[in-house]
Image (cartoon, rainbow, N blue to C red; front, top):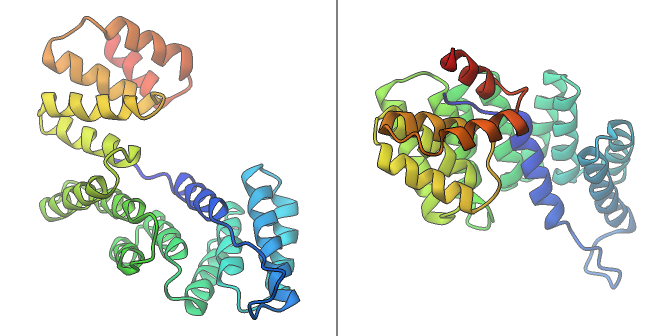
Length: 258
């Protein structure tokens, strides 16, 4: 039931970085023309990446690195791109380079943690997530707390990991009470614990803050069945079929419904 989607985490962090992208101060401030140009090309590269134009993203990010070889942002974005290209050796090299240039680049630390998690290097990944959180200037610590939690749960139902993961998710929700990834993972945990009323509350909060997903619909179906409440099952399963017919969750429903 616990899953981590590395690509989703990386794309999320890129959007975060893009939304707070660096403004180029034409009036000075110490940055050279090459450094200003590098920042612009990082933004362009991220934009192309998010639109799926990986060739142009590669071109712009390589140019950004050449223009400013000390740009942690450029190396970070290029690491994400290399991961998309399924080149883990290059991705790790550029993640490390980004963090070496700026040890307080929390977005890079979080994404490197997600990268390590996907490689099942769980303890190393937790260290990166905690380093990201340790930076008081980090704008989205709930992201790293949730990433750390989900990664720990990948190791299986080990009691120590489970309790630590729950603690991280609670911290994430204390920071961002409507942070959807934390809400959906807490719903999954409480459902497994047969705490159905609490599961319903988490799912209600999840649905208030955005559109339902295949996972939230499937959790709702399972939770309602466990509670013996079939009043909404028809609507939930219909929405699951209409909107997510190719999902694993819909396949699980079909298997259950036989």
